[in-house]
Image 1 (tube, helix red, strand yellow):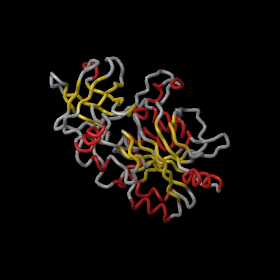
Image 2: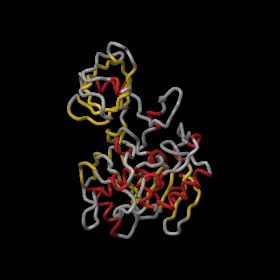
Image 3: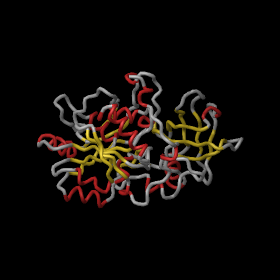
Image 4: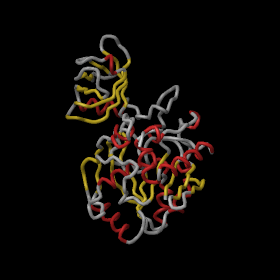
Amino acid sequence: MHISEFDYELPEELIAQHPLPQRDASRMLVVDRKSGTWTDSHFGRFSEYVNSGDAVVINNTRVFPARLIGKREGSGGRVEILLVREIQSDIWGALVRPGNRLKEGALVTFSDSSLEAQVLDAPGMEMRRLRFSSAEQLAQLMETQGEMPLPPYIKRPSGTESTDRERYQTVFARERGAIAAPTAGLHFTPGVLNQLRDRRARVVEITLHVGYGTFEPVRVSEVRDHRVRPEGFEITDESANFINETKKTGHRVIAVGTTTTRALESAVDSGGGVVPASGTADLTITPGYEFRAVDALLTNFHLPKSSLLLLVSAFAGKELIYKAYRHAVADQYRFYSYGDCMLIV
């Protein structure tokens, strides 16, 4: 399959630039794979689509303020750094802008701090390696001056806002380590979680630290050649037992988000059970993949020609997803991270 088959037209005004005042006020398009139909609904009714005994699996990763603004030593030019992963103590892999102007050995300094970062490699690679002079100062700088790493399609004149520290974070975020939010989880409130428990559904936590692989552009023509970068994840004994018991009793595992889906499907053994695991998820899900752990999926609307759109197309079928997306565009749903959601059953 060619990646061009996963393109669609989206008016720019449908890309949500801010979250709604209430988390659970988003619209929800409910897509039925069996009938090939969909229904317009609202996320506030999500619990009505969950049955007693079902397991709703959420990703409890916590986004850290990974975007830093510094200055190039000497010229004073602005440098934007998005920390992606810690390679070793004091050394990080990062996306740097303008990366092609920073030569090996260049220094970046930060305001109100003696902290500096030295570039360790030459231009040419998308990901640059930076050595920070102090891990302690870096951690402090992230908490006091770091910005939430909002996606580039959120284009505001003032950039990030103070409210993003709360709203670009799920209410169940606990395990620090993500550079992007598991956005399907942004719709949940404590009230919605209580509604699920009132319906005797299990809310099960797993962790997948959303990394650059989740939103890295697909750079190949043939879908089969695409690989999503590994991301750290953990599924505890307790969570695996809950999920396996749900499957054995004939109930559904409902994954909240594509990241949760990737973690669960990465941990399935040859017998179809989810095993406790702690490591990296390196599974790439594209059309033709046979899902073994996930029975239903709550997800936001995704960018054209993205790995996330490939995953949901694998789950529901490319033609059905394409038709549902066309409906969402025509009906003016809000798209992407701060947008509306889709429940695929």
